[in-house]
Length: 150
Image 1 (tube, rainbow, N blue to C red):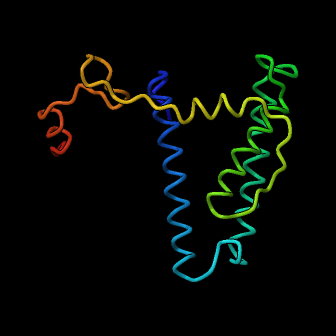
Image 2: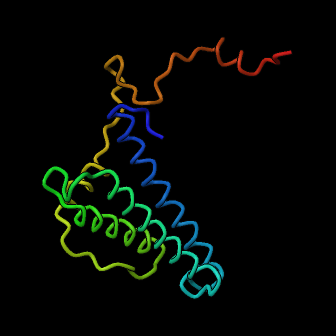
């Protein structure tokens, strides 16, 4: 979950992005070492497609509940749903699987992608700019966490 501030949220997006990429690489390596592909796995491939469909339905429900009326900031519900399809196709592509959805009118791809991939590097020279991992950490507090409460 995010920290509730813009800096923490952008870092969370980057972490989720990187976790997804690394996870896909691990899965692809596993199948490569077996000499096959996820698509050829008769047990798991249908489960992946089922999970993708469930994720799409879930995200569409959130969009329908979150947006009162037919649009938000000039973007229609369907255009937001097209973006969900776009992202799910990316995940499938990382797993070397074919796209599941045909994406049509999706003018917000560039905006979302820019904000997902744009990453602000930690500013070590400005106080208070250490991103969401900045804490009031000290040695005494760290060691106290390991002391027995008995």
